Length: 492
Length: 114
Image (tube, rainbow over all chains, first blue to last red):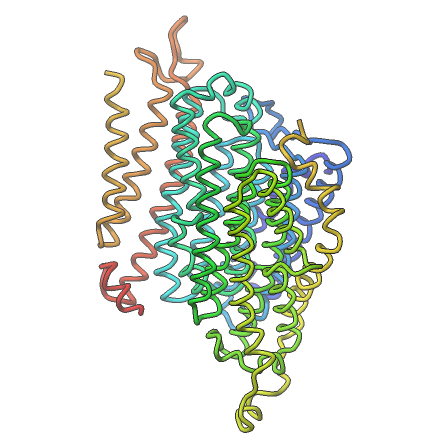
């Protein structure tokens, strides 16, 4: 069994998903249990793979026993296995969290929800473990199509958002397909390792330049890079809370992982990649400022978090574009940071909305007394977003600032520092409302009471809230033991 | 005329992008998306084309006869299936929107929403 773990971490959620609609008709509890067991197994597999890969180096797995370049190969390196661990961990937490959300849903809806959720997870895991650029496209579409379905479950406004997301997302994926079409036309291979070798003499040919531009545009759409972010706010604001939590935490991260993989591991970070990285960096920097300013302008808590996501993806883009060791380390740490933090924030936003129906920021007055645990998690996550030590957000931004100084990219230093202040502005508004402002006496009587969330929703939130500090304190260990092996120079 | 299929692919993609950007009818937008996909599929299949070559069925090919590349055909087949799923989802969302709003005009739906 263990030698097939790389395939199993993708196949278990994929196959489990197919049975779920039937299981849910029998019993909703059974469907939920089945989902949790499948994700627990997937996560255990990812963690064991990560440990194995860190000890023994890269793991090549030939799907169906066909050796590359003919067959499809799964390659697990510390980067891929680390991403798989992150994705499966958040999938597990979100599946746990979504229980109360679906309590009143019809059995078929519950079944479809969990089935689509497992399909998204399988698609994202497939994207991070595959060693084949076309296989990556297939997994991209599996995760994307399932996401569109999940988003549309949020009601009529969500259907409009899902339609728009579907069109924009499909165009993004098609750009990527066209890009790998160009790469295939000049190299005749789709295997990443093979491609990396054959493309070196062709790096400055026109076809490769076009391919790089198309892949950047395609995944720029998928990760909501600044001018291509139009689909994101509506999608995040109207999708059901568990869906928003999961896609905001990991989907954009997997998209930028693909850019990192293609630009640094396949194309070696040189040639036509350099102008692409410059574009990525500047788009990210403008996105940081624009996203933060738009977040300040929002009244709706969910929409504010959505715009803040655009800004946070900008940080990762800036880190990658710098191309020095410090920058990429910072970008990878920020992927981890933002997945944990934004997951926690959307869980709080979803929980508050589920319990009280409140989403606009002025109504958060005295929320800390109604939901003390949830708001404590919110504060922990907000501190990390602003970048206050000892949260993990401080360390990732610290790396990014140092990297910008090292590369003499002064505009980026200013952008990162200024946006931390902007983050403080929009998060402090909510902290102020929920902790420091008081209602009138009669409002107080209605509002205060045991309205904290059920344990199933609270536990995943608290896990993420604690993780913010744990990862901060242990960030040195995370960087030396995992991230330093995920750099393009570390694995060659 | 090796360029003809490539020009056709570029034309399909441009017409599709035009439809997606400037049309307001949801069905026409869906048609635009499928046009883009068709253009990309045509491009992929063209990369494997060899003049005068036969279909890549190993047992049926005569001795010494050149065959077209099978990999792009497999890619295109997969992309067509994915495109089918995308189109089905697009149209089902359009039906859901039509049932609720009574119109397929994207501008009107956006206005009703706010």
